[in-house]
Amino acid sequence: MVNQAFCDLTGLNRIDILGKDDLQLGFHMNPQIVKTNDLKAFTTRSPLDIPIEKITDYFGITLLFRTKRLPIFDEDNNVEFILFIARDVTASKSEEQ
Image (cartoon, rainbow, N blue to C red; front, side, top):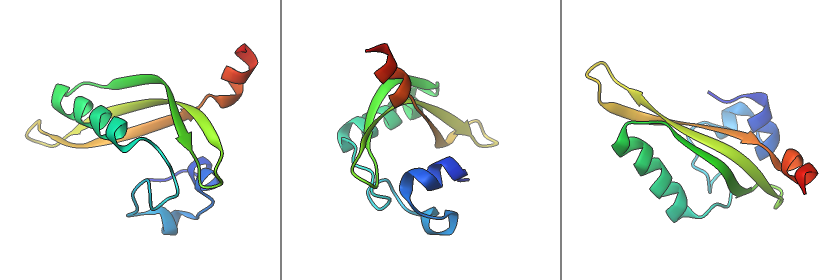
């Protein structure tokens, strides 16, 4: 599922986003940090809340996001995938400084 805010962030439409990974979408994040955080949510079977995560978008602008990773379980209570939610907090963090 992709919302309009995510389409605006990537500069792509919904159809062009589906099935692509972060690098294919033009995001530049530390892959080791992303992998570590995803695995932590997967192995602990618990939500992971990260207050600030830097992401460089499709246009080359570095933004600050509060991110959450939520494990989604199948009918046998196994983690099937991780739901990633990101909220842009760049403006609010700039106001704090």
